[in-house]
Length: 262
Image (cartoon, rainbow, N blue to C red):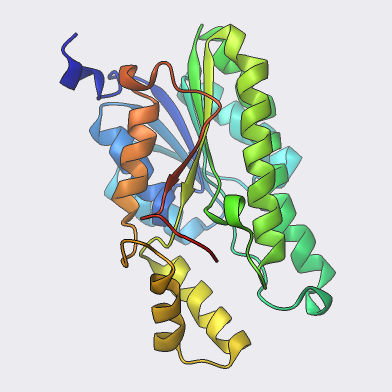
């Protein structure tokens, strides 16, 4: 196989992308579809899921809340029925969580952030692992964040969960590696899109600044002084699941333009 060809995932991969109906997840799902994969997308947002299905009728879609064990059980019944197995898991589901001083954060919002961003990855991997083993090899890509290596004041539930994803990834790589399953984490930085706009707006309000002032503060912390595009994150996911990524496992790979601090 020529080196350039090794950069492309093999056609026919069976891929699950959680929270794949919009944002980074949708771009990742679309990238795998373009590469010839069979893709199942789950999401909690029925409207976004319907829009994704309309754009990509070749993809399978289903509603699921990854923080709900029963919903994850139903999701994997769909994986078995519609994909017949699994080669790649993209653990993308996550929420921004609350913004504010630790002593002012509602307990229910802290718990929901940890449940979706960390527990959800555990619940999904728990049922994905047997399917990946059955295929003889496989790849897991967990979405963390640059907040998972730097910490993030006023966003402590989110940062704590994303640090947890790094620990989960390193541990799974050791546990599943002898069975040929590679496990890596991608740490996006300031990714252009509706989600970062909400985050900047909430943080600006907490700091008493305008949106424009807070956005400028964010970009000043990035060495490249620009946002990451969702396609940049999708490209990394494709690479990790391609033959070129066959020897990469247990890594936390930032796609962030070099965020220096948060």
